[in-house]
Length: 524
Image (cartoon, rainbow, N blue to C red; front, side, top):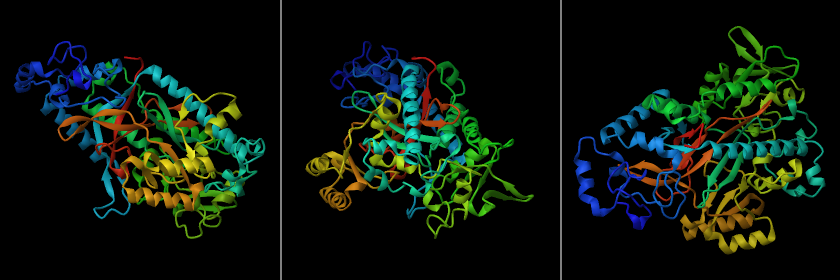
């Protein structure tokens, strides 16, 4: 049982109404046992008896064990649930997600590829003042990134002024020199961005990385909310939770805004690699929610530098493709010649201004993890502002002094490959074996431009239901930013949770799950 030595102080031990504190101390063990035997036992006491908060920033509990103000309504609802009722809610949510086919794909797994995305019933809650801060910081960041992309593909002033070394841009895997000088509608390159945020041991928000190519995961945000509302139909209004269901409407609005000029009726479609892609469920889900078609490369053809969709009624011109295919596979006549996923002639249609891709070709030069290091400089250069949300301290292996520091402190650092995602190409030094550390040491020496290193951050933790009790598990947060006529950010996002005890890797492909994220209208 949690007691004062573990940072929890109760005014009335064993009483769920005591100061918002869900647990008591051992002196009143008899009271607790009597509660647990009661048919309407307080679930909070049963499941939090060994919960520990020390050493990390806990999203739900302050250092003294008190429930944070913005979690109190949730606590009031959950504290009266019996074990049976809680498990019924969990099963109802799992069944809802199963019926909706909320899955992801694990490549190369002998047990099969399709998995239901694990979901934890206890939501992550963000009060309004925190959300307003995040909105300002994320709007600032995507604005600077779009300025940067326009500049890099036009005058390259940021290079000429010595703010970013040209070598880093030219050597970026996703820099597309063939698109220098090509204009895009509204001068917008990143239309959809998923920026990953974490909180450190002080509770400060930090940007972990920007996903500006084909960010995934927003379908889980929407489906998680649907499942939670079915399980707790009366809780959301009482708790003052802002809705997320407007995201597909806002996304479609963004896509239409960046359509080629002069079009009265804009035709949009989602371009997917197909059923074997890890996010195929999401592609179909978003297309259905927006009321547009989901197409594969074989469903499209290019004629006279225009893109057409094959339908039962003949060819239909497409104006905007929300593409979920990486640059390399978009057009076999320009990029990878062995690609069977793309559309021959698509790049010429883009160059001619007859179709818009969201996100644009070449945006990967902005979410290269080496470029991440320079985003604070971009914000200062283009906006003359200091970053509202800071980066994590980052070392570039291609810089001599940084390389020495990385080599000297490798077992203490997190190392990331510049263009990998999903938790791949990554070393968590404190969790790695000596052999793994030495393997990465050689990889870094062989290709220093391809690696960055960061200190190991004690990610914030959140109560998570694990094997019959609540335990703290590390989380991160991916809000989704839309850049169209205005910047729009859905009031919520994907909270990913590392379900493996002690793990800092939250990706679904690495054993992670998700939580519903509640943004409140107020602070409590």
